[in-house]
Image (tube, rainbow, N blue to C red; front, side, top):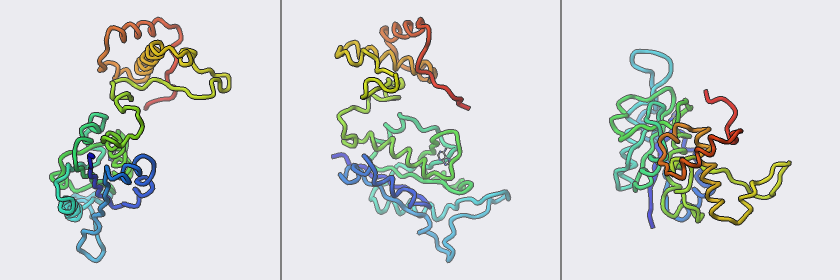
Length: 257
Ligand code: ADE
């Protein structure tokens, strides 16, 4: 059995409690396939006030996370684990996280995620990590939710974690396209019917419909992904068909910035 260890360095370990026990993540932990440990840098302070932050050199608003307790926590984690984990700092200044990163991290036996907090961290902390990752172009209170994003995307790719027979290889981003739309019962809901082909039992027609709808969605919602996807002759023919259809459906309303 593949066993993976994930350590999170956080000043707010309580943030993780419900999340860690729920759903497939809770199951994966209970099965022993994955282990998640939380470490609070505050436990590595040496002063009476257990100080973890201080004012920035050069002045300015906000407090800055100090290097000593955080680095002590990092070193303690590796000592306890008996291995030197891949250290990742969560920060909006990091490289954007994607499915390829999740695939890469899911191969590693030990990953250590460091959550930033407050208005920033002492730049010297960067010298103690292997990489800096951002989960998107927005600013969170701290790296906790970002660490959960990275952990979930990674852990679900660890062999044996997705109990479901369905392969994660079929999903959005794995194939370079968005996922095709799906329906379940009832066959008609508030006047909206499930496409007939999905109830036809014709597996070839269903596969073609799904591929076409995945292409349509990706073309409408994420043309950037479509431009990078590997497409064959059949895909190009389906895209031509879509382009000739009068009313493109499946687009998304609302603005994206
Ligand atoms: N900490 C605060 N905002 C973040 C973001 N967008 N990604 C990663 N860590 C963060």
